[in-house]
View 1 (cartoon, rainbow, N blue to C red):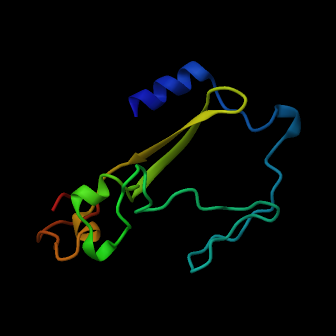
View 2: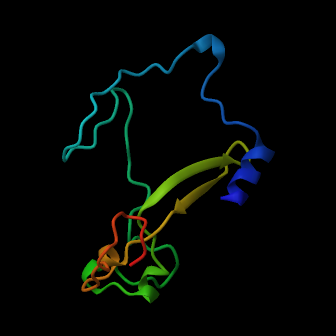
Length: 124
């Protein structure tokens, strides 16, 4: 996180528009939780990477029922709570992703949470 902050400080702010342009110009969507990924009219959402996608050559195919620490070390993790883009120049940039914590009982079949763990941040 410190490296991301330092890079952002060196590169300056990423500005989406100017004061003259005013507020963002998209139609607000209704807040809700369902099986559909809602996107404002005129915009689109694409999957860039998801849990288990290979991040190095030779990564095994993702199988959540047979996950191991060795396999996961070669695959994109889960529970990322921050994504930031730091421009380097007109055509390149650095994508920063933070995985705050893991829940082994989600990642590895057969592991159960210790009794007394009350929230998602508690270690098992």
